[in-house]
Image (cartoon, rainbow, N blue to C red; front, side, top):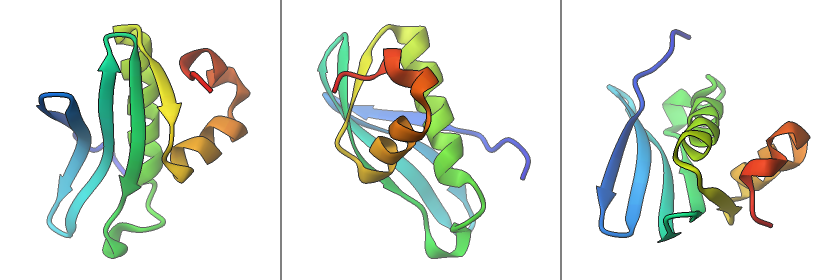
Length: 96
């Protein structure tokens, strides 16, 4: 899979990272608690896109965004929490 275009949509304290495809949007949603803390609560991928790495691409984008913008992640989303556990090198980016 080539690198998909990931965009960010924000409406006040709510937002999401999204990959738009003809089969639907893959998304990772979050809430901004403060400039230094975001709760990530959902990762969703359309059935037609499952198993193609879209959720992981969103996860990598989240980690880079947290690093670039200086915030910590509260991983309420089961997928994000599972990836956090698999990648101890990302520990500095989480508030758990």
